[in-house]
Image (cartoon, rainbow, N blue to C red; front, side):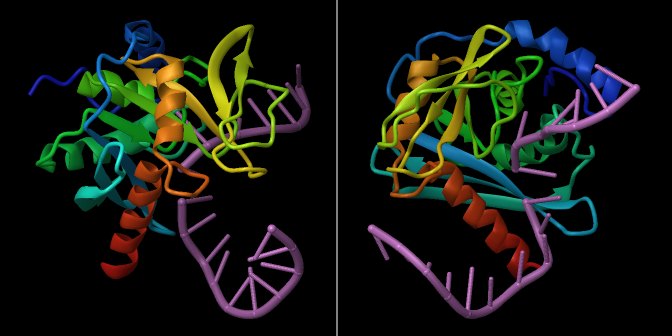
Length: 223
DNA sequence: GCGACAG
DNA sequence: ATCTTGTCGC
């Protein structure tokens, strides 16, 4: 009913909006451990802007599926590095509205503060939904790190332009780490702890892993 | 100017 | 992201 902004923007306007909204991100301690945590993701059509968006809500820390909701829609923005949220957020918000069990924390497949303008997908959705969010990306976008041990649970600060923008987290022994950063309303420590707590035995944390499987299932079945 | 570049 | 089977290794 009261959107923070509309979505029909040019790339230039989108960048200006990120700079304008970035200061509103809240890096404050998570008030309570979540009872429900959700993962959101999108699956794309090979040759069009048709996308399948989905959110999977899980109980915490049990990691049992409580609800799966998804839909097919059209992405209003192309993929441009640094502007991913303008392509994915609208679809995620559509699904969010249909959710019967609103989670306490939302996990996104992408960056939060580990972004060139400190405003990745997790920050954008965290502000729009005004709730705790964080991003767990599969590949590095900005920043550098060193000294990450091989054992599950090991972490290393992700540093970009002199700032700690995230944490590189080893979720499985000797397996490529994931890049975790705050989206909104939590600290980096909270994000790292949640990432390790959402363990399903895979590299990717359970919420986004389930969401990924779900939307892929939707696309392959409905197409 | 050149190279890099979440999903 | 998507296109795609088997295969090496724990």
